[in-house]
Length: 200
Image (cartoon, rainbow, N blue to C red; front, top):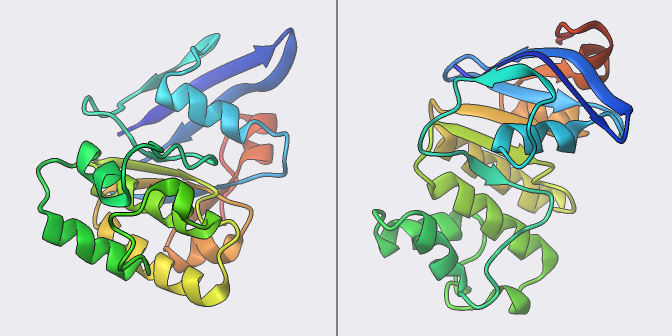
């Protein structure tokens, strides 16, 4: 079970958060809500290992890595949509990968490169890449931003199905997205002030 205990971090002496505690029980779905500037992105960088905690600990992360959707799409520009998925999931068949892209409204775009896609299409490709990566922990940072309602509904249904019983952490400004994915809601601003979770 991923667990954060008494985590503190600051930039140039300015605290981002102090004494932060958060548990992600195996198979749970958690949504992290907070206004801008409360350290959501910093927390995700700490979870991914690109930053090191200054105090406290993060334990229980999967050895095989984290399936991650960043705020930036981070697709490989020289690879096609399908190749971006193949690189993280070589064990999956093309038939399975193409079926997932179809669920996300990307049928016919399998051989296109990211530069030919709209912003929303690149976003859904990044979501697909995370969903096919073999990890018990999936983290998504505002993955549905900019999607219209019809596309959002289809994408949420696809994510819900593909997550299965994996542990899921969603960073979002939308309680509605969290509820539609069956997430417990944790408010990071309260968490960083008190060191304990405030949930809906």
